[in-house]
Amino acid sequence: MKIRSLPFWILAADLGWIPAAMLLACAFRSGISRNLLSPDMVRAAAPYVISTCLLWSIFSPAMKLDGAHDGWWFPAVASRLFLAGCGVLVALFCARYAAHWPIARLILAVFALHLTAGSMAIRYAARAFIRLRYRRGQVHRVAIVGNDRVAHEVAGKIERHPEMLWQVVGFFAPGDVFGGGGDIAFDAVEGMALSDSADPASQTTLSTLGVLDALMVERVEEVIVTTGGPFPREVLNLLARCRKLGIHVCLVPQPYELYLSRPRILDLDGVPLLELNESPGSATRRWKRMFDLALATVLLLAALPILLPCALWLYLSTGRAFLREPRCGRRGKPFAMFRLNIERQRANAPWIERVLENLSLTELPQLWNVLRGEMSVVGPRPEAPERVKHYSEWQAQRLSVAPGIVGLAQVHGLREHSSSEEKTRFDLQYLLNLSPLTDLALLLQTIWTLAMRLVRSPAAEWRSERPSPAHGRRDVVKAEPVEGIV
Picture 1 (cartoon, rainbow, N blue to C red):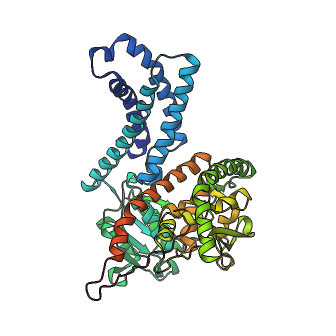
Picture 2: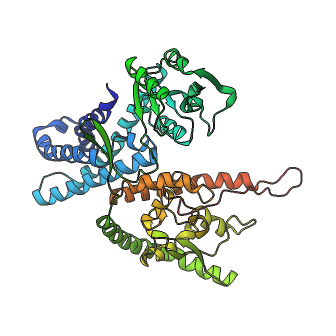
Picture 3: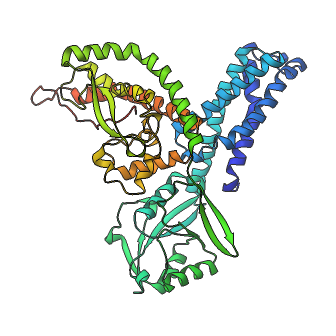
């Protein structure tokens, strides 16, 4: 199987699983018997199977259901498959009532459940197959020209996408060879032991002529250049010789940070041009605002039974129910972000405060910010003006949309103490894929994150508060600061 055809083979496996899922759903309702494959049953199920195959063939590329898009991360893959399964179920229910196709509603519900669970199993079987190829050494060995932040980011992305079948074996640091000195440092990185900066002890200084020998010794098949040009003659000669030896050369366009766009390669009489298309415009903001109003209204009504008693308790105990924290919104416009008046990480806090903070229920008042148009349900988390005024032009791109209560960076574990640069990379990735389905998928991932936090909280609480054998006191372990719903 060629790795580029992986999405095709996963889709083919999904389509093969669809009739099996319908068969299992029918067996769940009527039991295993000879009538399970009777002509009447086949005629009743056939329209649903054919319709599901057509719908899934549309959903798979449109919703990026192959699993590789999200780095095979379970919450992200499961959320996309769940939404696709719900879409199929709704469409089949509508077809059932419109065309009067004779099949029980329970069978359709069980069928959608089997379809989602089986599709998840197919993706992780594919991932296990890829890992098996790694263990057998059936990978393309990659060397990266560069040893800066971009180089290590590219290496990290390669590690998160095993379907590429690439293994980084080292970095050729852009040292004196780019200045014409003739020497270059090779940093071996066997086993993907990456660090933010090169370890001088692991580097070997090579002459320019020795670089090709090092590439051959390491059996390198791909060279990725992450440094900016223009390149001196030595580097151009090196890349030309790599191509003559059959080593593929890839270039990261510079400046890489200007990637809040969908690039397209244009050929101008043999000169490649990288066209940067504009980010989503006003049409996207309109649907997002309507989506926010509808969702925030529903969530706020559902949250009132929790918010009102907590606000009353805080008002009676502290004299103030809500806090107003200064934040920067879209285009840097300042606004006051609401949250419950609970001090973060306060020692000896009452149990109810710890529960509200662990589940991030303290952020629910920000639904009012959403209704006021200052925030969105999903989007980059708002930051304080002190941080925003130090943004680079690249980081300022996250201010192109309204900030959100939940965001892609927070789903991946980044918090208030994380650097703005780390969060910006996830936020810009989100901005490139703005859609209602992306927002719904992130909300489902948020629910998963909160559920896992709820499962882990009792054990963490017991470990952090068990009596000290020396003094009989309770040891308090300081937790990480919490930002946003996740």
